[in-house]
Image (cartoon, rainbow, N blue to C red; front, side, top):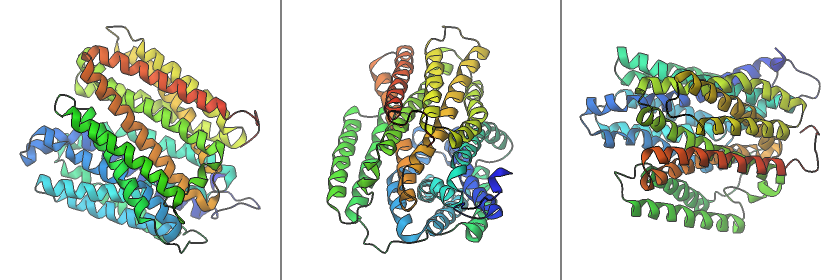
Length: 464
């Protein structure tokens, strides 16, 4: 395969070792996707098994997301001081051991504690996964490998609900965590064997103030999004307090980073306008995706009356569209302008979202699937070229920070999208809120297109 063939002047690892490092990173990415998707559908069974209320069981999912969001920037910064292999090995080990703890949990408190540890392990790997891929593959193959990574995540997203349903129908929810153990051990062995540490590690003081403020800002953001998405069960004042905390600590974080000698996240990385615009484009697109992923289940189940299983299956065309488009988009991004390809992808994504927003009152399943697959194709065309644009416009020594920014804007965007849907649900009837949400997703995508187009000036059709 071309991915594993070497050419004179190639950066990174030789062919076979590239493949093993890719397997380690992608195995972990698949584990995280499976874990998130399958746990969501297992919450009712977990609540019954542990004899707790469904509302309380939601913290099995929220605990993971909260701890992951709070530590993403911290691990991205530590990667330049401790090395990619050290951080990735730590994350894999914690995630795998926490999976053992989850499988053995006999109480909700123990399960939530293990899920918090899983989130920390997941953040350590997700924050530097793309940076590791960049470090082991040459620049000429960066778009292609990121496209394959997007394909894997899309395939995992499509398969996870079906696999989770099959496991839950035959076995206990504990097996959803147990399947992580052999996969984690395999990925850990591969990591120790081939994943390199950074060539020149920085022996610098750690920015504890920046770490605390970033954790507070992202943690408060997750709590605000959770409160907004359950307007009937929570206090709106509490949600607003969390949102205000996120904003204030976010501004304080930026202020500290500007003054710090060795900041947690060097703001100089945003000096490249192409990196900054790619990050903002990614943020707007994930806001759109976050809105859609929260709004569509209400549309399918509450408006159209489909069952939970059918609703899950109606989501499948979206990741299938990503699977169809992402590898080709990644290959094209290695030959042509990644910004142009990702902008075209956003245009297709906007068309798909508009088609979903215009669904008739009694839409058949095949019609929903066709419109959803257009969204998936558009997002698949956008995501891997845009990720390539971000990583390629950060120096290799800053690739860990760039990878962390990529993970942060994805998390921030999805949470902001979820919060917007929660606000609409608290202000309007469910049907109206869904309609408004879908049109808001279209508006967010149009904003992403405008940001993406603005970075095309000055290099029109030049290769990235």
